Length: 233
Image 1: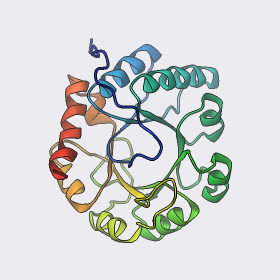
Image 2 (image 1 turned 120 degrees about the vertical axis):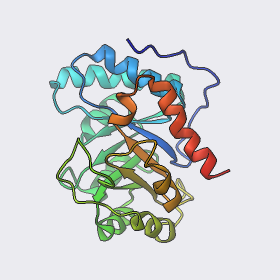
Image 3 (image 1 turned 90 degrees about the vertical axis):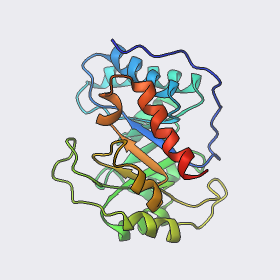
């Protein structure tokens, strides 16, 4: 049983804070209690952005889990985003939503969300799509899979030069995001293969398996956060 330490020295995150660091994507859980235990451990390790992704539970259970995660992330001053479900994000007052290619119009979603919520977009290995997403108001664009991924084994590989391009191109400031559009790496990321992505300019590392399958989730989350601290020291 992986036990999460209680939150200590938590920092309240505001929407004006830069999107940077470990981005925990929840795997599928049969038990909601285990989901909360594991996410709490990641938050205790320093993770400050979580995406709730649940393709298996029925609607009432997804709502229950999302509300519980919303309460938990608030305790840690962290952000909670909802995968592919704008209605659920509104229902629980999440901090934002992440959309895949076929999950909704980004311009319309930004208009519905308003300026202060976070909008993320999957851009796979397509930089033209990232430009369009940034123009539509996305706060971050996700490229992946950057490495072979057990979650999406058929994904087109995304190369590190995409993060160089994003860092130098998608930087137009906005009132809520003065640093421009952030870039997120996803797919097969581990502690061992993460440093080149950060060096290339990735602002966020979206991790599922290497985080939530770790024997000590809090320690693994802290190790990912240290990679960013060391890279930007």
